[in-house]
Length: 316
Image (cartoon, rainbow, N blue to C red; front, top):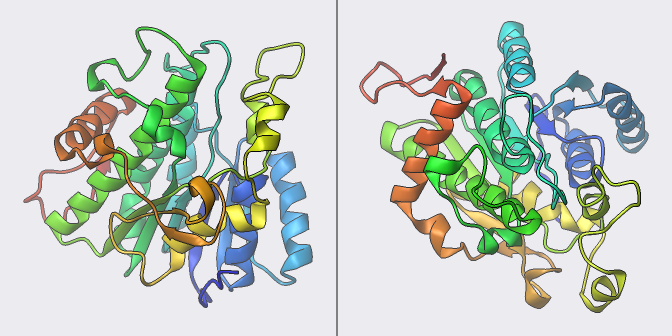
């Protein structure tokens, strides 16, 4: 089992920390001494998770704050609250997401739900929190992607709503977008001399409620991402193992800027954390830059010109 290094005195924000890999990551970070902000859409579920984590890490410093990544006003309010506190931020873990929603849903901002929740919301949150991250030596942003990124196609001109909706392709596009965000942020950090690491991970096939929550959204009868007989044929793992690539990306000194981590066992679905192979599209630096620019236009956040002082970003 991966041992998280000592994080005493550090502050981490974990999105989607009320269940699955987010709750496991938050518990392990708190157990290593970090102050952890549980960023959740439903505060009641966040409070329940806080109680569970305290059972595992007595004395842990945990705070629940509301964050709906599918609502840019909520993202702004959350970030403003963190900025208003004036406390350093050492680690942002972009974990929350939704998977394979069967029918196209548009958010209050007019974005397709999976792209909004999995990529555009985390992008806006990351940029809005960059002033805190850049003011903290050795800060990191770790983002959860998926093997489904290999199925994704990105058209920066059509980020808000796809031409044709497919549950799996929309999910894959959002997870490819996460890798583009990760890689371009790493490039910016290197280019501008920021003391910041941007990394990514995927959980392989980890047993969480994600496989049922997204595919069942808006349906009277619950659905799953794939039939149970298919699930039974695939190797899978529990959440304590599935969260480890994300924890490595977030805390391991060997996790370099722009690196990507996942299970190194059978089919890349299970096993100990190791370096993961990036899809070809995620290695396209031009596509990453175009996505970053288009996402900034859609979400109303922007980075400064490269020659503007320390390069600390602002939000419009």
